[in-house]
Image (cartoon, rainbow, N blue to C red):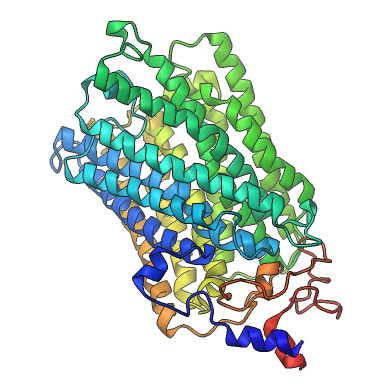
Length: 558
């Protein structure tokens, strides 16, 4: 026992050791790669946020008096492409998933460390191509690249932008492959499938989508490039192509992609609900299987984006019914999280405030999604700001809340420092208020008939856009605060203990921050998931010996 404690105290954390740029750029440590992703997605979030600010400032007045019409199209395209392909899709899996999955299952690293590093490089290459495209003037197709405009008429930057998304897609595929193999083959002894944290279940389901759906959008983008380069009649109706074919290919990926963004956030929610209610997650097995159900059903509902296209009303009816079905496993999660909190002594630390914010925003986004799955209503509000509001409530409101909640929860584990609670709580509240002030008025103006992507609009809609723009400033302050106090905490924050939240999970039995190889001895898991009374790291544990070596406690025992 003394040998283990001594080895743990002598080995530096993954943040220690060699600090050269080369050592970081060539690292195969999943934790360092997660930090590289964290820096990268933060930079892209800032770029996408600046583009969003330009859009909101332009819409402050009915007349187009800040940007030209073409400049406005390019601004919302940059915002959509950067936020979706370079922040929302890679955000939680690449940062939190990369860092935590090996720790949570008792592994020393991911199954393919070199491929993990390659996936980050592919992401960076794709991002740099996107940045070059922006510097060259950008593209004006919107993030959906709808044909035949993108394949025939738009400027040449479509090829570069498509290449950026194409390369980033391979990064997503490799990450999903790595997670699947790691979860299957590298679980610690005793870590059965139904002892896995729900965070891992969510990433497993997400990885299946990444592996199966991403090649389809890669093919669609490649066909757009081929049509532009060689004039083949793939999507252009003038030469015998079918533009609706692109919509089928694009949405077959892009609706499952919604769950690539959302499912990992749901996994974060399960961890936060268990930790701050001090309860086992209600209906663990049902939540685990609901993640797989969402992944499977997500492949069957792409047609609800095409109710006003040329598809038959019978196909529309089927897709409408399937849309209602895919809402069921999501609703199960919400009900089970609520049941977990029922009569619990909840701690309202900053991560929990973000979790509650997620619940509120996801509830609104989910209910309006069911509304949009109804044919009659969708025909009325299709391509209006109602759709914009729904999309942002789910993709930005819920997903970013989950990302920030998870980041605040595991920040002490990642960097070994605590952050100040007061500004963290304030930021969570500001983001919730600012987000609703920004996007709820868009439900109203969309229902009244305001089309999305319009540069100018009739004056009677101005009040709603003024409310949205003012709310976006509050939202921006809420997003800026964590950047300030989290960076501050790296130098001045109080040193974190192994388990500052008194949470459960193998990752909380490693030092903060963890050592390079995570574990000196292969851990053995003998407790059920979220079983506080049996977990050796919990203050309410029953006194049983720790099944996983806890370095500081071993040292104290000696």
